[in-house]
Image (cartoon, rainbow, N blue to C red; front, side):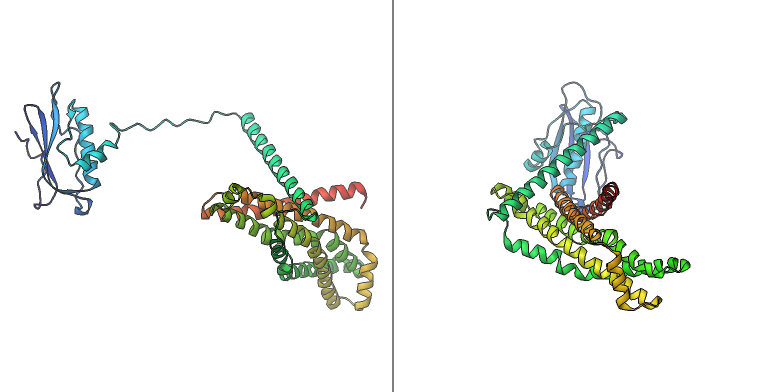
Length: 386
């Protein structure tokens, strides 16, 4: 017998989906008619209490002779029927359904699994500190190993036995050196001009404007030019290194090189690191002269001093040891920036978003690391009396 209208869904058209429940001697028969597709805009829901309580051994069967067509929405409906049959203690018989629908239905679980309870992190502060310390030590060891491989590759390159291509080295030297002259010139010129302007305003109070030459020269040679040039290269070249290597990581080029046995340190990292280490000291010297020239331009417009007198005062007040100190710092800055950028690129993920993240991280690490290294050099210089 067919149940009342509250159990059976009325149809609007002949192709609209509909179902009805009929009790039989063997159990319950679910009659399905119409076209069961999501495009009809009629989502068919099956109430969990729509099936009558069953006796032991009874079965839920289907009558799908009136089924006109179906898609995944029909599978969802049948799965809800299967769950309701389990609650009503009915055996589920899907033999009357289309074979393809039976195969899809077999892929679904017998019942809905409850979500796993959230596991609270019960690690104490000591465990967090210990984990962070171990990760830091592991990263230091990885970077140190990478640096040793690069040094070994550089020695082999001098002996003519390196896997580095000369073409790659020359391209990286051009990108890290001559291509960066414009931005290095602009930044160092403006910094030198600012130093001279601020120095003149203060020194004029003590009638000591002539010492602005020493201020600009020593500050540029010892600190400002080395730091500003390193920050420029961290943002310009370091970010480019990280983006390039992370892109190769995403394109599986790094995996291909490792599979073919080509060493990454010699083929990819060595040209990048060596080019920046070679060009950074020259960029520092160039930036120092540009900064002093910027101070010269401002001083000539604000104080009564001949150009020759300004340059003589500058070279008399700035010892060559200041240039040597800045030169050595620029070497360490370059090695740190290039090595950190390459390491960040190798650690990056394989998606397009990871390329931007790697470039940003390389720039931040490079800038912060350069300032931290400069603080270390300041302590060493103070202890050594430089």
